Image (cartoon, rainbow, N blue to C red; front, top):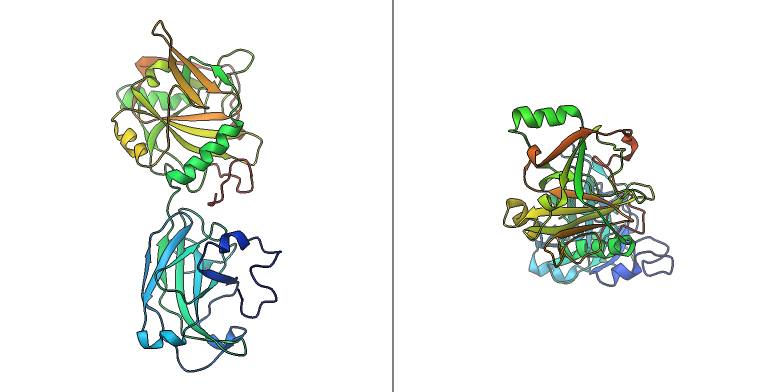
Length: 377
């Protein structure tokens, strides 16, 4: 594998990309800016004109890969030895400038049959907008490259995590979940105004809202799933909910059996941390057959409500339900249906409002080895 004008190749012992490259059609990677001027690219020579790729198509998009193809004059294929693929992360939707940081801007691939798969978690992130342009190239005897003009620029967006990626996160979360502790209530903290609004304008109900962008960047529930956040973690010494909260001094408590029972499906949603020792697991509780249940069935790993490492509901011989939660992770439970305040109680807590512990729109630590997988953040 060769990189034009670089002193070492991608298969060198110092390269972090060797294992990934074995699975790619890409043969090398070079960092350089596309400026439309062939003569400015080091090691690139002028010769007879090569065909410019036309009608570029992007397909089979995942969170860390895509397929690319284009139309090309069959008569010129024999002269083409390589493709240069310029890949850039978009800065934002309203700008024509592109962000190059952490994104290699030129992929150099052998001229393999199209469509060609581009795959690599080290330069592709989930749910991220990119632009791509292509050149054809011909390697000369002296090692230089003759290249075509750049193609048109195409935009695309990578996908969310698939259930395969979420299962990898699930397995990592299981490792640190710890032993199970009993609990009896789900609770939700908010400001007094939140509950006043529920009583006066929402028929005494808390209504689902779209989940924020906290957690893993590739999570398929962020910005899409509607639900109500609840907690269930208890203090080790009392077995009761903590008296402190980052979300408000008023707390709604409801019996665990109201939200979690054999008629409820349970899904794994995410696993993340926020540059601290605390790790969070997001679970989704969805009444069977509800819109939230249908959403989750297509996107999230389902959990056995009686046998998993995070949150369980089991039925004893006397018919009573018993509930347990994992001790060593903080559970964020999303319930996908409206909840009537009459099903529980609202009261002021005696503790403090610890704003520093809020996870609203919290960004996941991309460097944490405990809660990250190989397919991006």
